[in-house]
View 1 (cartoon, rainbow, N blue to C red):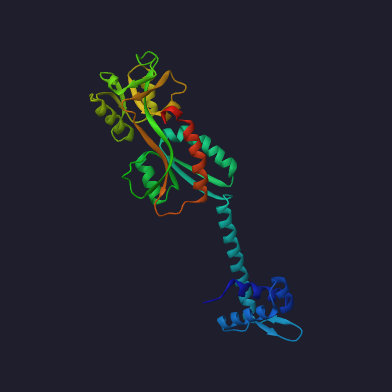
View 2: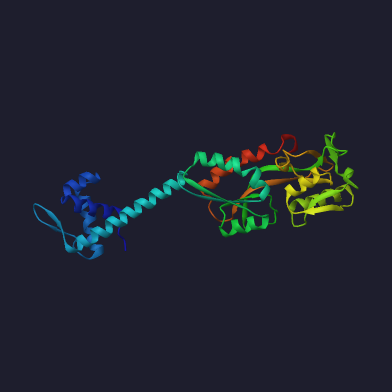
Length: 303
């Protein structure tokens, strides 16, 4: 079937006005072109759509039947085009974000608030889950984008760098490191260490730091959540090596962060989306906003 939008528009104009000349004027086309469009449509349908007299053009039974369906089809097409325009202009849509709990707590709220102020027609959904779930959600399409730190070996995702985040030492005010500006990794030897469990990417980087300093890693406590580690530090149960953005979670606790040196270990916080899937206008707009808030959480001298 080779029916065109131009043919349908021509047909509907003639059906409404009952006159080829007036229909051509409305459509701003020459009358011969309009007549040809109707003839081509009738040839494609293999029926006459109009009975033509010297005074009037009237719909045939087939024409009346086709008019209702054609008008509905054209209306639905116009609605579809308008919907796409709304999505492109970020006036309507949905944004599904997956992020680890700490980043979801300290980065997303302000970023989403600004995003929704700019684009109130877009609904935002949040999933605060672990890294593996973030990756799987993005790959499967359950999430439009993900936030966090991800291994370079991960396949099926594309990364948009947001900020580089360094590991820091977190201690309480009674710690011997309290007055230090920075702390070499080797000085953590024999310190009671609070770490995340081994399924955390942060823990793997902590192990790299201890190996580089040639000291043994003997955790005093292993926990799953960064906020739990900070609470244990505040209680004086040890020190913890955590990402710089954990400073936001420690803001109201009696805990301070110190630069770790020799070596300085950092990682990239990224926004990810699925490989091979086009990035929606909403994701592109959100990436710009969330980058700014992520950078605010990382002191310039540690990035």
